[in-house]
Amino acid sequence: MSTLVQPHWSELIPHAGDMRLLDRVMDWSDKAVHAIAERHGPHDHPLRDARKLHAVHLAEYGAQASAVHAALLATDADESRVRSGRLVSLRDVRLTIEYVDLSKGRLDVFAECLFADARGAQYAFRVDQCGQTLASGRVAVMYSGC
Image 1 (cartoon, rainbow, N blue to C red):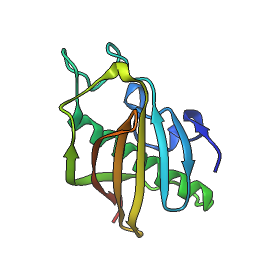
Image 2 (cartoon, one colour):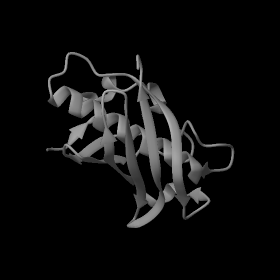
Image 3 (tube, rainbow, N blue to C red):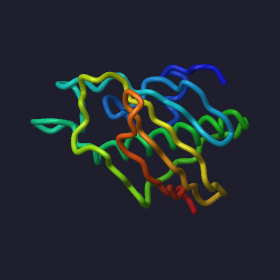
């Protein structure tokens, strides 16, 4: 699929305002999504503390990429509404750094759907910067009303 900017999908996910961490979807298929984040400057990041952005927050990027993917699938399938969900677990999270170097540019966020049904989904995610993997893991989402 072609590149999608935030207005194409931002209203389909529960994140709002500055907590919409992803800027563009570079590519997506029925199994995976590649998104990028470019707005993580040193002074305006909502997850940054007084010093830096801790790498543990990269799991949120993976979770948001998963939410975007699920929303794109639902709209592509012409479902009447996108199901809301809740992050219920993080597993096998691996961090290769302690803090993200915000000066090194964009983050490439990849999410791959491992399993999905009417009750929820499980995704593997990876966050790269300048060709280096900074974080990876799995997220599980349970859809509301299940």
